[in-house]
Length: 297
Image 1 (cartoon, one colour):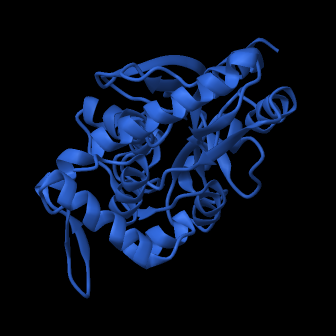
Image 2 (cartoon, rainbow, N blue to C red):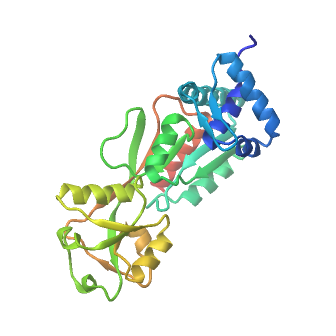
């Protein structure tokens, strides 16, 4: 046997993440037949089928699911080794994948990325926004799809995750101008129990924080409308279709809605996270330093 090749592992990870040979080939920028051939060769090498595939779907087998985290770790180690060798001259090279949030408080992400790019012109940052919010970012950091991320963590920090809170702000309660709560000088969670909410999907840090606050107070609430951006949240609240919580930094510039003080404010943290199971590549370590520099500026 010739042994497993890194190219085969990279093709395998692409198919596993896309669950499509067509999309994987487009992502890899190679012809689909090359991806299929590489996967078949990898399956022969490991002695097991890695995918169940038919004309309608592609799914990981038990063997494929077991192999995926190890394949990601192997690819990350290979990238780190190549970047370390390239950086022996003191020049940072390679790519960093960073997860981000819609709102990052006092962390000015465009500014820190601009500074990183000027200092390290041969390194590149890929910034991603997980559709499943901070919960998705945590999974991506733990399994190696992201090098580091700005995420909002609520509750217990998962094992294998390094984190530090880099900023914190209140969540603002927003209502329509003609809403009965708009004239109130302050409200409690109990005052909101019968309201309909505009909120973000389960897994987003601000959603988790609010859900836990209500559950901790022995209250339930209705969330008939879920959105994935602040603009749509504001528009729906403005139309009187619900009330909602947004980070105060994002809520400050929103016309057409009224902030209502909460008697016991909900503090929303943003953390910088990365895996403790894998060493940061030189490029990822350099980006981490830029985040800290941004906080000190």
